[in-house]
Amino acid sequence: MERVAADTLSLSDPYTVPTKYWHRLADGRIQCDVCPRACKLREGQRGLCFVRGRVEDQVVLASHGRSSGFCIDPIEKKPLNHFLPGSSVLSFGTAGCNLACRFCQNWDISKSREIDTLTSAASPEMLASTAERLGCRSIAFTYNDPVIFMEYAMDVADACRERGIKAVAVSAGYMNPDARTEFYQHMDAANIDLKAFTDSFYQKITFSKLPVVLETLEFLRDTDVWFEITTLLIPGHNDSDAEIAEECAWLADHLGLDVPLHFTAFHPDFKMRDVPHTPPATLSRAAALAREHGLRYVYTGNVHDPAGQTTICPGCERPVVMRDWYVINGYGLTDDGRCAHCATSVPGRFDGPVGSWGSRRVPVRLGL
Ligand code: SF4
Image (cartoon, rainbow, N blue to C red; front, side):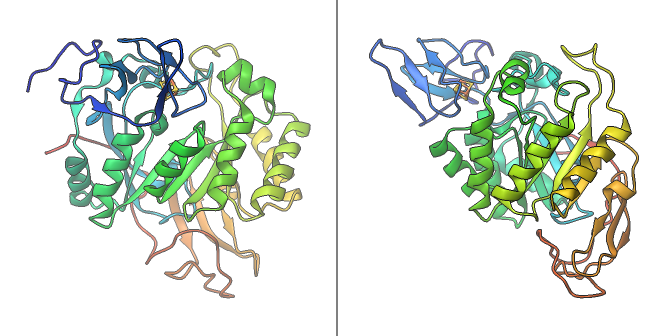
């Protein structure tokens, strides 16, 4: 098939597809309606995420069927601790992002222009058959935010569902309501980054808005999508007791006490290399605050902290899932997710015995 230069938008490019969330403005520009960036485009222009742009008088997605690479990971790495524990997940991403986080931990992908990174052709059918062949129980849209390539992610999710493989979105939750409703009809689980709990952090550090993310969390609460939340604690920026307490109070009030919350450690990256690593004590302090607010499933991440990564039964208070990094080394749940001691249900999606993927991270080449 003919390929045009990757930085030139064209519907003759086999990886470029029409989209439907946009509308025409009075001044002749077209506004993309997928996310609150509301990029207003003239012919040939791309949006902030770079993978969407205007061509032939419509907004297109220019990365349908191309990826920046694949890996098999433990599902706990997404992180999802209550979703098919111990199973492997085929992870992949594309290029670009609709946020502009100064601390981005995947900036080589998220800030790249597609010509640099989108090297692997990956049709939905290829991805689904690869996940099945490799024994993955789910596929994850990760590394960069699937919001911006929603049409591709939904097609992949549908191909996976036909084979009994679940779809997982790892997202910042920065999405408009109509697009969000359609997108999550195709997803089985999500991990949403709640990057902080102040508007000023969201505006200055991520160039986005906190209320939109909170709306996404409330939206997910009312769906069948299993979701967990991650907050990356950045020293001096979002790690005060007051801010953590405010976040936990909101989660308890609006989402209930059963939503799993992961506090993870920052490492200096991208435009925030002058900020130190998060001390493990900060994560422990945050987790203690969350538990004081009644949250039942609070975890620490990116540090070695077996106690902080253990799931406690809410009924008998025995440890029921013990983890060491991404390895499950103690498991006391039944196949349907009840405590083996007292039969109390642990919230999540459990389906059969715990998996044994362990901590391996295996790069994958499609078709091999
Ligand atoms: S999805 Fe991309 S093009 Fe659309 S509004 Fe968001 S950043 Fe802009």
